[in-house]
Image (tube, rainbow, N blue to C red; front, side, top):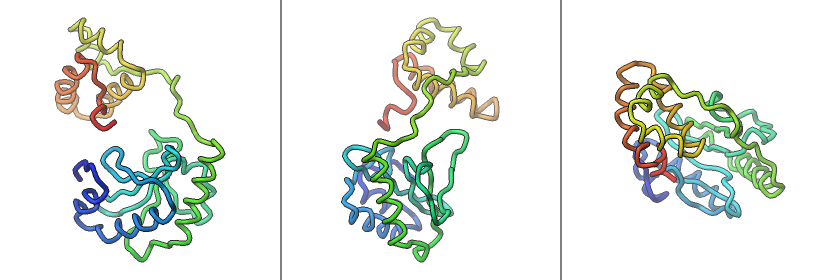
Length: 196
């Protein structure tokens, strides 16, 4: 799915989940959250804090709670879609409009707002060492200007680039990714800056 700038655009671009996403949107808007678009998808905030988002995928649509790991989850519906990457975020997946239970969703959102109000949150580990893959190290060493630009990036941006290369399984994919990111690094841009 393409990155959209409006919630309407996001819903309209969904091939098979338009009615379901519109239904979730109606529920979330009734909770008096602020509706916006972040990372190309609908996001709902409370006093500037991310609470919940909606998303559509090939086999399901759903909600994601930014601090979902702190929710009690009495219905046992929340899953960690990226256990190796996210500590706080949790998804609630639906396969049909009949899976949407308004009272249950409202209870989860109410609890998520209360957590935000109280200031409770799981913060990312910013001190985790950055493991720069050998392919990236080698290419940076070949160009001192690009290497200096990489070192000048924030730790978060360095980690995004390192992870992007490390996650590629095939050598030709790593090479393609390196070709893409080296000019970005040289200009001081982060991998995901266009989405921020």
